[in-house]
Length: 327
Image (cartoon, rainbow, N blue to C red):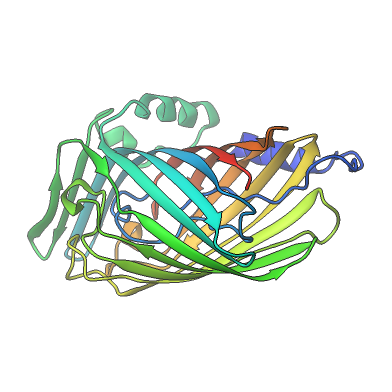
């Protein structure tokens, strides 16, 4: 599933922007996303973190609804992932001093059968897009199986859900100006989930992250980015193949089009978390496009769609919905 309509909308809207009004809010808020690969959900790869410390206590909720249907094999490895994932991630944040802030993320995750398969099949048929392994798999069922050197390492055939691993972060604002901000974060993921339910890894992970924002032209245009490294503890999910270090990054742009309405696009990428020759365990690149609307009350609504730009390295499609209070 590709994104011809939303991508064209983003480009067309950006090319027809009226002059900025003095009382309109600035653009510059990225999607709060990360790879929704069900076999990475328990790891502490960082979500998008703020480029500045919140002025006051605030919160938000992000919802992710994804679908994956892949069959891969290489050498002595074979993988089947046919699953739908849904994650709700509550976020609380505030400041300790003018330059020091904190953020807490509490996820709840479901992995199982679902209802998206027929919709995605219709989308593929309408736009003449390749269907991959979907045509060979039953609709709305779950099957996650992984075999290596003749041994079945994973065999999941029933749905599961539960509280995921909590993530707590401490940030220090390195730079703050009208046109740009830069903040360093220490992000710690705690093993409150369950590896058997794919809601946790059974280990503590630590990430170091730099998050920045810059408006090079005017308040309507904003570029944002993030770079991070994650040190993975010894987890319970495929422990013999788990790597200890994963690098990640994000880059995107947002443009304010009318009042509180913005369109935006961003790329998120990370290196492999497992030693494997299979694409689904390899490096991933995900594109998220959509927009947000900032209400006068200070609440922001995000709507977006994520796609696997590196095909079959991450879920086929993830729908993103977020509600945040600007702090």
